[in-house]
Length: 453
Image (cartoon, rainbow, N blue to C red; front, side):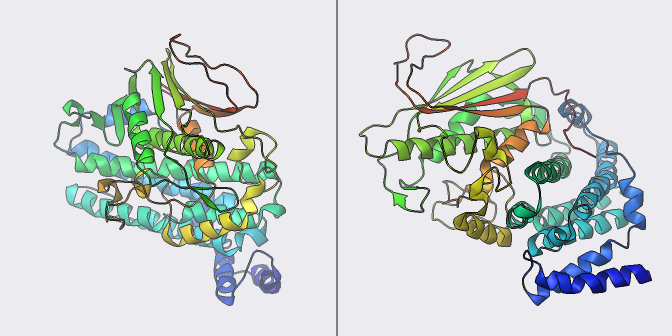
């Protein structure tokens, strides 16, 4: 290490102890370790100078459609060489933050995880046979589990340090970090799924798929599934003050439009977005009408265009008027300036608890066994666990929507009016104050990943 680097670390050790974003001596020691990485950059420079090779859904499907051993080995080596490049770019993003933010304990935790993963990937030997691939798959699964705390830890750290960054810079950083994280998980989980399905004809099954991509994803079926899981929850809604309000049930979800719509997409991404939008709509409707004998329904309209699939969710939950935000899009922000709830004490406590166990941003992780205990594999469970309100659902839904070039827009309808079906005149007329959520996803699968390098 250079003399200048030693002076830099000595000078900043004292400042780290005074930093508002840091805490215990152990955290300071971790901060010094983090600082050392700034001067071990020869390998990082090499990988960060490379461009990420972005893929489209169509490319992933085409390559994995006729999987054999040779193709699987190529897939493994692509993932092995591509992921350290993507991680290196995000380490550079972390290093570009003000030093007091990088040394914040939760951000430093993410930095250490990224650095460790980068070192492990670049040292992993080439895969030449199925035995090597089996070891590589074990390696990927371990890393996926290790990185589960990234989302809540990063959100917690940046929320606490939000006053130190302009809102635009903070949101841009978080979007790059989280979209890149999604991209890495997609590549890793897709390869794991391809390895599992080797020798099977997954395209001619009841649920045709290639890897993690459903080639004929039934939109109505996904909506009905998410609605069923949410309506199966125990009654009782936590309001903005933390008080649980008893309710008489959950609103009905009415699906209309082009109900036979199917397209190639990642089921986990679509269902996460639908789950979060429906969950928010049900909560808002329940709180707004908790004293009513019946709840107004939530309408979900599906429209399939030439190039994309559109889904509109309409509720009568009172709209998005709030002192915490100035516009509905602020709900996607990680900055306390745009969304004051980012530094709400209950949100911070929930993020701290989540960062200890991890959040993968899936519907499955909110699913538990009927006896109330977490399943070893939560996707095999049934029912919905109580899920603390951390403020991650809408921002993550927005990021999932934009990953392959889609969009998510929230519109607050703060007035009285009539709501009728676009496709039918038989629906009853309702007076409403509510929210419309417009989800648009590409249908052709030709859009490249929306990662930034």
